[in-house]
Image (tube, rainbow over all chains, first blue to last red; front, side, top):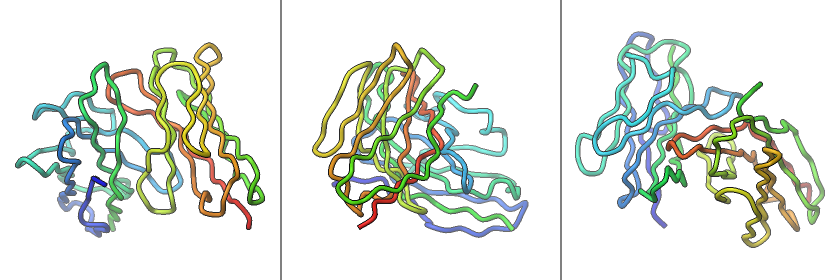
Length: 116
Length: 110
């Protein structure tokens, strides 16, 4: 069964450092997303990406964050200068273009980011 | 008022019982409703997907949506210990962005 894969599973970084989280979405999917889940809190939307551009982003997704689809298979989230409060599970998701904003999204296993 | 509210639980039931989970929401623009299952420190796994109001059944799982009351439910029949997980409701207004509930942790006792 096709799945969304994320690497690494766990990343520890020092405050102020840049991190890149990587995702391989399901191959025939056209919409890509990043969500995050701070420990004990709900899953929160960060950004959606379609046709090589951001289609929507949340207030959380400020100038410290960027996304990129560097080739035909990978989708990355970069955090330029990490803060302690960026520590969370980051989930990549993807969905087919089913029209009318259909959001049957499939999630990866997540990258646990720890900022120290 | 929070956009999506979900009974926090935790919920503990004996094996074989029916598990009943629900969420309420405030945004009348939501049209797509999902239930995800999440095991500890893992990604959400899509269980059920429904569009607009009505019922949908898949094996032991039944999802119900009542848009007039802004209320959605998930029922798990003949619950098994392997159903022990956190269940998340999620919904979308058709803008490719999901809004999640906080999750209900369910334990099915053998």
